[in-house]
Image (cartoon, rainbow, N blue to C red):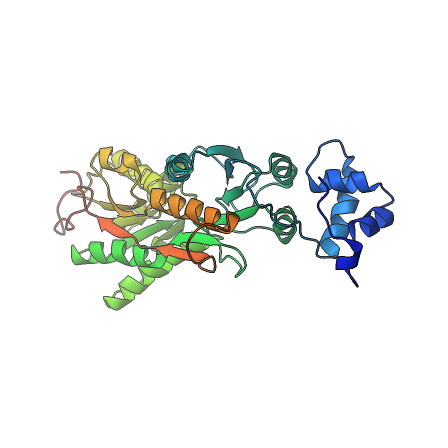
Length: 353
């Protein structure tokens, strides 16, 4: 079926016949591009898409879903927290007799350019993206094919027109730091995530705010940036613990980084929590099985993914109940106290003794 606009409906606007004429191709070729068919040469496809986008063409939304698929896209599938997000989307999809497609593409900032051609061919009901942002050209292409999308756990500040589900990163940073201060720690280090991700900076801002509210000075030498993986936490912790005046507690910006901190402490001959208190972030299932079990900030990953999938259904299915204008959501976090934190040891006590 050719989706488009009749000449008598589009006075002053370009028609698909106009696009075909300007591109020097047939109307059926334009239809193939719109429907994501692979049998169109890349230069021709690009030319047609540029003309469609330049003239603000949008494909009408179908009255029935053309697919029973929800696609979830990550830049990596190795992290344990990725499995929690997948579980959340799967929970909602299963309740609607839908299937979930997993795709790995791009960097933490945006999916790769090769992904868009594939998703246009698959034409899922909608897409959940675990990225900080979405390039304008990808947004236009998805919207022109009536493929809705939601960004989950946005690491950047998503544009107003981008539906998103995140969590209270600043509040989580405050809660983790305040817990350590209440235990009596004053020299506290932090290993947050990458310095180009808003969630990392928000957790760091929460750390700074909690220190300030307690009248404590933030020592910039005790701030490190990691990558949310074990190695980043390990390297950052070694750098902190090798200082002449090391911290008595470390707040790691993810549970995986916290596991790296635990290993760095072991290498340095320190006992956790006797010589060093450690707080993580995320509360992945592995956190309660660490040795010692990890005090951490619970980020409701499964619930975030479930809300993203529900939001996608509201956007994609007109009959869905709910306020379709509510497309920005931030879920709360909470501190989970386990065995990796305690009051600092008395001055002069022997580390590890």
